[in-house]
Image 1: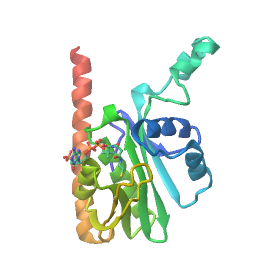
Image 2: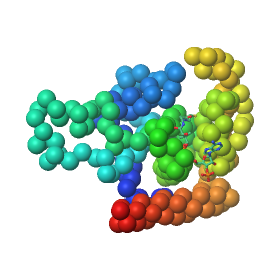
Image 3: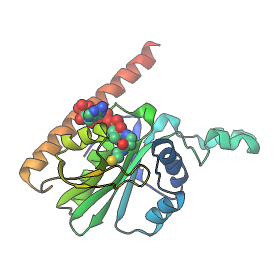
Image 4: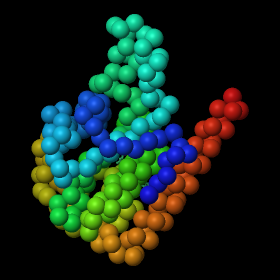
Length: 214
Ligand SMILES: CC(C)(COP(=O)(O)OP(=O)(O)OC[C@H]1O[C@@H](n2cnc3c(N)ncnc32)[C@H](O)[C@@H]1OP(=O)(O)O)[C@@H](O)C(=O)NCCC(=O)NCCS
């Protein structure tokens, strides 16, 4: 499990307050986004669903600053449609002992810093704690970046769904891990967690160093 206490990031369960922004990000990224209603239903009603939201603490709005603004301008500070503190999100459905990663996404300008990995790592950690024996997902055959991340975490292609995506009829690879409970998988997760922790802590130190230096 990654300790975010020394970083500028937080991870928390997705709530109904988050879904408008999550949906806005979803629409920015995907050609066939989930609807707002789908997110509402997932968060409110789906007991087998587990979603996490990643936030950047410096962008979290200050209730005091918000109160000081005239009422008509408050939405600029933290519009529910686009809360800038929310950087990304991910989730899985737990079906008996299978954790199916159903979504994973990060705002474009925040990619390439290990934050997509942080989300995936945390989803897998949560799935393990909830007793998942293995994890599965679908990914576009053209999405090499996501496949790279999933490959790093031990997902292997086990099948292909032809024409799976409704927007362009692209095929999906079905990917799956080996048993999450195996010592080999636990060792892989532990090694990646340690490296990611060091990366996030080093980035934070560099950021605060540059703040002090400026
Ligand atoms: C997929 C996504 C969440 C990954 O997050 P990210 O911040 O870009 O990736 P990270 O910086 O966390 O990279 C982690 C690992 O992913 C892999 N990876 C990252 N970029 C890659 C690329 N361009 N090609 C191949 N592998 C790549 C690497 O293994 C990397 O580990 P490394 O840094 O040790 O090399 C993000 O790019 C995204 O939101 N994409 C759009 C939505 C999407 O495609 N979601 C997945 C749907 S199945």
